[in-house]
Length: 99
Image (tube, rainbow, N blue to C red):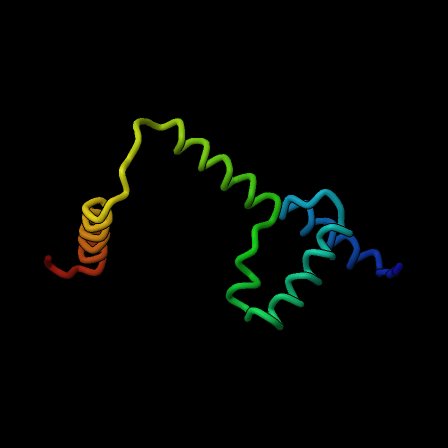
């Protein structure tokens, strides 16, 4: 299928495609169509959580950084309880609630 777009719209799509990490406007447009179809099936929250190439690259970089940042962590019940305690403490400080 071929779609002819006005120059202004094509320029805007090229800008958005590049900003999102897509190689071409065609890839970006295809992603928009797939996302729209997924929204019909899965709902907007799930459909819009899909990774773009740029988000995927950023996520992979963060995962690599985490893997190279130090020793292993055992994510047992004690680990998650401590994480919850720390996060609740930060939330309490942020909202001005004494813990």
